[in-house]
Image (cartoon, rainbow, N blue to C red; front, top):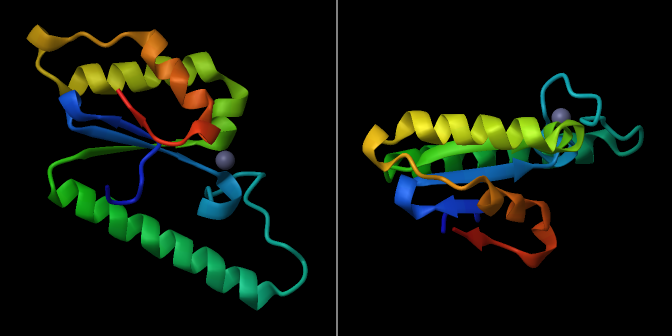
Length: 119
Ligand SMILES: [Zn+2]
């Protein structure tokens, strides 16, 4: 799957990326620091990541997916809020007749080590 999303919700044609603030350059975020040495190396690396993110998002949208991004710092700060937010967004996107999304399913995105989640 394009971009290897952290969560895939085929029923809702929605993918969710959980982006690390440092690697994906969360704008204005205190975690999106730039190392003090080898600045050019890092800049180039970050630019590549940003470009790749954009390209992948575009491709996914072209294929009819809704693309959501959740930043790591937002997860750290308040997981419940983010889960609610995602739930709201997904609800908003799908017809009211099929509004059925269980929050516990979302809690699986915390254990990222286990790889991709398909719900
Ligand atoms: Zn951040």
